[in-house]
Length: 160
Image (cartoon, rainbow, N blue to C red; front, side):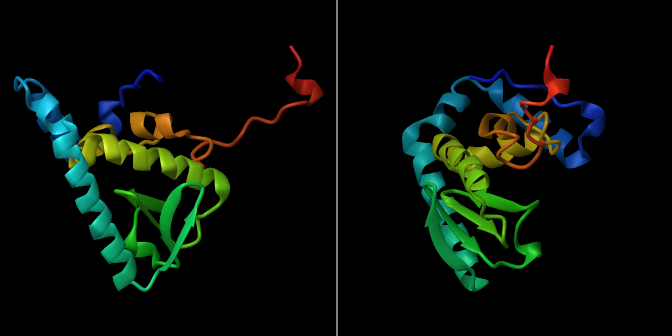
């Protein structure tokens, strides 16, 4: 497991700091974390989020596809999702960002949604928008998600 990296508070937006404070406060409530992460609570939230994302993709006339263990809508307008694409529940919403490594990255987010349910939303926001310090993006793989460029191997300059 990858150790979470704390985001720099100076780089977080006001909303991210506020949600982070609420999340940290919620962790102090005895049993709240256990309740929210209880499979009987998290899984219905996951399915609700999936249904909402599926409906959103259909309303916007996206093309429904499946690949690399991910269900996704492509061909959506750029205002319909964040960054290069957004996973909500079990559905990835994007315009054209459907390369194999990206879909593998998004498959990890689907598993995160399944584990945390609707609690994933405030947890993700509280983790901060810089992907390099967002523990969920780090866990999904920054390179596969397109946040960092892959290191080139096999060149003489790489030798020790």
